[in-house]
Image (cartoon, rainbow, N blue to C red; front, top):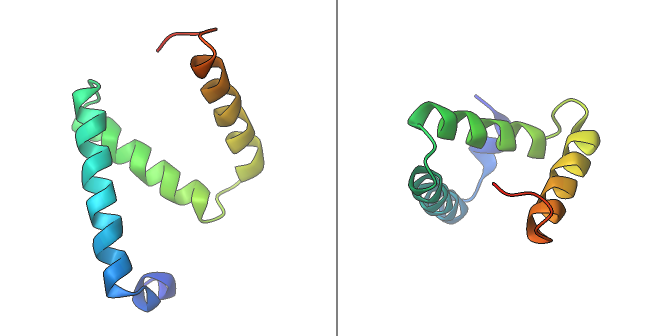
Length: 75
């Protein structure tokens, strides 16, 4: 078992579960399929925990976020 999961505070685990549930609901309302939602949440977790080439991916995601926020591209 992952040592990070074992050492996590039970209160934090509940908060993370609540956040994940809210995010799943938001993604579902945005039209994502259950498989896509699982993939997105898994990828985010993987990159947040030091996934390969993390900085490059985060930089690109931040750029896309900026483009959407400024109205340059539409979702």
